[in-house]
Amino acid sequence: MKRGDMERRMTDEVGRGRSRGWYHGWNVVGACVVAQVSSLGLTINCFSLFIPHWSAEFDVPVSTLALAITLFSFVTAFLSYQIGILASRYPARWLFGGGIALLAACHLLISQVGAGWEIIALYVLVLPFAISFTGSIPAQSLVSRWFAQKSGLAMGLTATGMTLAGVLFPPVIVHFLPLAGWRVIWAGMGVAMLAVTLPIALLAMRDRPDPDDPAIYARPPDGHAQAAPSAVTLAGIVRRRNFWVIMSAFLSVQLIALTVAVDIAPIIYSYGGTAGAAGLFLSIYSAGSIAAKLGSGWLADRIGNSVPLALTAVAGGTGAILLAVPDTHPLYLAGVAITLGLAGGAWTLLASSMLAEFGPVAFGRAFGLAATFSPLPTLAPPVVAWIHEASGSFALPLIGLGVLAFVAAGAVMAFYRAPGAAPAPVGTATPG
Image (cartoon, rainbow, N blue to C red; front, top):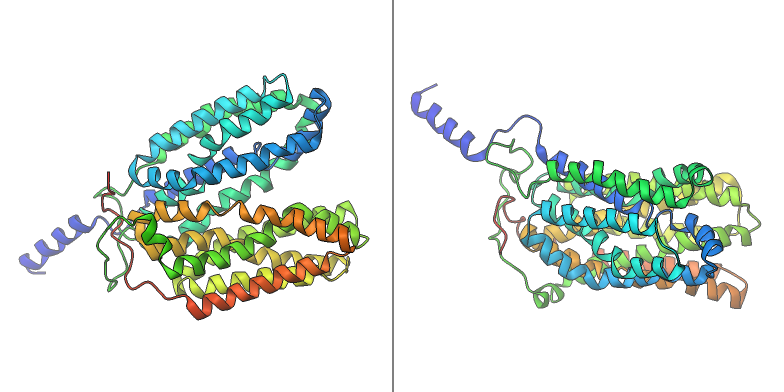
C-alpha cells in the first residue's frame, strides 16, 4: 500500500471511529430497559395485586384506589411533550439519575403510607415525574442518538422494557406478597433501585458516541444522504401529514391493546371460559407482544416503517374480530392471543417512524407530542364494557375496533410518504 493511501485510510478511520468492537450503544439500550422495568414493575404492572390489600387495610373502595392509575395517566400525558424537549436538551444521566432517585423515594414513601388518599396523592403528584424521566420518551430519545443503523432493532429492544416488567414481576409478587407483606416489597424495591438501577444508569448512559467508539451503528449506511440538523417546532410537527398517519395506526392498535389488557377476563368469562383460560391468554399475548417489538424493529430497518405499521394495524384488527367469536377452545384462544400479540410492535414503530420523519434532533419533541395522545385509548375498555352491559354482547365493539384498525392500515398504505432524507448525524449536537 502506498504511503499516501495508508495516511488517507488512517485519517478516515480516525474521523469515522473504529468500525469493529463492542458498541457502547447496546449498553445504553440495556440500561434503558433496566430503568423501565424498575419504574413500571410495581407501580403499574403489579398495581392490581396490591389493591385488595390497600382496600382492606385503609377501608377504601377499590374504585377509588383505581382512580390513581387514571389520574396518573393523564398527568403523565400532560408532561410528555415537555419531557421530550428536556430529553433532547439535557444529559441523560441527569434525567435518568434524578428520575430513578425520585422513583426510589416514591417507593419508600408508599411503604410508609397510613391512608389510601396518600397512595393516590403519590401517584398523581410524584410518580408521573419519576416515571416520565425514566420511561420510553427519554429512553428512545437517547437511543435515537446512538443508532443511525439498526435503529429499529435498538428501539425494539428498548421498548421491551415496557412489557418485560409485566412478564417478570407479577409471579414474583404473587409469591412474596403473603410472605413479606406489601410494605416490605415496596421498601425493598426502593432500596434495590438506589443500589442497582441508579448505578447502572449512571455508569452506562452517555448522550452520544465518542470519537473512538466503533462506528458501525453510529455511522449512517453508505450512500444515505444526511439531512441538516434542525429543531422542529410544535406547529411544524402537527403540519406533517405523516405524523397523523402514523398516529392513526398507533392509536387504533392501542385501543385494541388496552381493551385486551382490561377486558379480556370478562370477555372470556362471557363466553363460558375460566380464569385459567384468561391467564393463559394474557401470557401468550405478552410473549407475542415482546416478539413483535423486536420483529417490527428488525423489519423497519430493512423495508422502512410504512409496511410494518400497516401490518401491525392489520394484526390488531384481525385479532379483535377473531376475539368477537365466542369460542373458548384453547387452540383458538391461543391463535387469537398470538394474532393480537403481533400488533405489540406499535410502540417500537411509533419511535422508529418518528425518528425517520424528524431525525434525532427533533425526535424527543415529536415522540413526546405523540405520547400525549396515549391516554385516549384508555377510554376504550370502559366503553366496550358499557356496550356489553347494554347489549349483552362484546362482539359489536370488538368488530368496530377491528374495522377501525383496518381503516388505519389503509390510511398508512395510501397516505404515508417515506421521508425525503435520512436522519441527521447521530453525533450532531442538540440545541441547548
